[in-house]
Image (cartoon, rainbow, N blue to C red):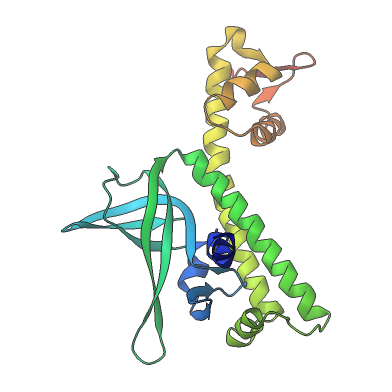
Amino acid sequence: MQKGRRNHEPALTATCRLFFEELLKSDFVVKENEETFLVTPTCARCNRLFGVGEVKEVEKRGKITKIKISDSTATLNIYTDKAIGLESNKFLAFVGIIHVREGAGKSKAVLILVEEAEPVEENVRDNWILNTARRTMERIELLRSNLNLSLALPKKQWMKGAVEHYAIDDDKLDSWGSVAINAVKGMWQHYSKTAKKMVLEALEEAEKSSMERVKLTNALKKRGLMEEWIEEVIDELFAEGRCYEPEVGMVKVVEVKE
């Protein structure tokens, strides 16, 4: 029995974090041990997708629900027969099986059938973007190092096939790197604006519009903000002259005289 399970380990480790734009531009398929895997332009190899995004539209089609979901790089259609209780402009985390359908000519289309899904808070989507960007950049740098060192790319036939299929070079890797970077930038711009508002509100609610930095950080963490970004936002408010440090370890709102 153990031997049988061992043969199925590749499927268990093939759940990927991918930006939707990369997934939608993936069309290289390999088969191993009677299983089908989609290989992407940055050489992620997977047959399942873990994604988090903002729900844009929900459409019931008999027993099947079609969900349009965006991760900020692209909008993806996913399908489920499960009752999830979704609304537009809410965030959803899901694990889905990747099916590749043959289209006209040699074209292929990706179909995602949801296995598990759950509504989540916006900070879960933000963390997903950060982790997906990190993993994307790791794959890119691995490919780049092999290309630049002119190594036999690679020993794994599926990866070698993907490099040839997508004609991967430095320019294309730079392009996929930009997708990851822009996703993080877009999230940060939105997050920074929202987080600054939350910091100022917390301070204004405090006595004399000031608070110990540690207490302020803890209060904002309870509201779902990430600690490392809270520090960044507080420093930005200092730089913008909207807050100052009346004494070491304290944060106070600058009073605007009318």
